[in-house]
Length: 245
Image 1: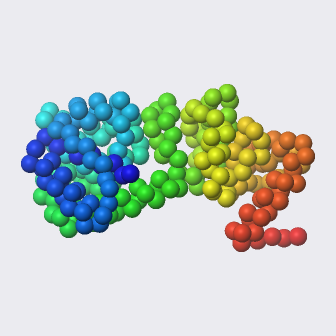
Image 2 (image 1 turned 45 degrees about the vertical axis):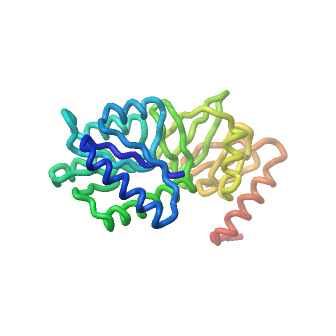
Image 3 (image 1 turned 135 degrees about the horizontal axis):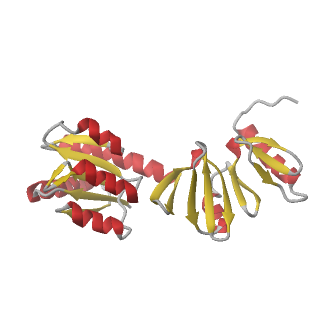
């Protein structure tokens, strides 16, 4: 279920947002969980406890606070949530995008604009959930785009996610559970008990190892080379990639 949060010090604005969301859910027959906060301290306290939202409507001007600074704190816990700033002025529009804002909405919010904005944010959130993995790591909670994940390796209970930009995200869990979650995606294969790889990033397969595009070598257990090659060739054929024999 999509989770939405509203944060504004003006109770009339919060009431209006709740009303708009209610009408939106009724019109489109959607179930959306909603949380309301009258101060940034309440919101941050919930997020520090681990609460996560898909969409956040955040007032830019709060008592003794700047919504942009609040968003910076939120990004320490959550790099995923779609932050939609609410304001009666365009003064902070440029700054809002330095914290990865999804949109900058001027008040008052008309029903047509709210519905259009919710359609866009909900649609993108659902798509991201389908083709991504939510990872709780040392830096907070982040969403991994599966098409950017090159490979994953495990050391004990630590999972290391190697991304296409060279970055490495660290999480906890078992490789068995991770593989179970990614079985539905045809581009992931587990050539070794300690590795899970994205076949889109394979550079070469030899009898002893898979060489990834970043030149990392993933070991292939004895007797498993033919199976891995066949899986890769089948995947490449379905993707209509060019073969030279």
